[in-house]
Length: 97
Image (cartoon, rainbow, N blue to C red; front, top):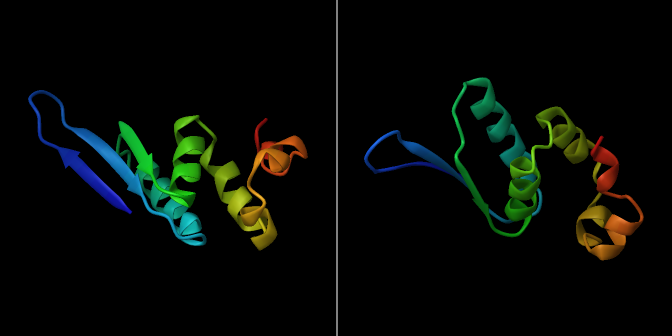
């Protein structure tokens, strides 16, 4: 996980870089929640593997409490079944209200 302030004229932008590595995704959600609680504005999110999945739902606006709930209930099998079928049977979409 990496939080970087990019040098430029004008207001500083913050990019959140999220890594891959399966269960590291849960740790990334904790960091994301802490940054939001501290009021750190996140302008850009990039990620690899599970970090890309987390980044996509963060950027799409999933509330943090739902993302935390997802990580508390997701199973090992869910992670490896992350494909079109998992969306069709509502494995991940059940967290979007």
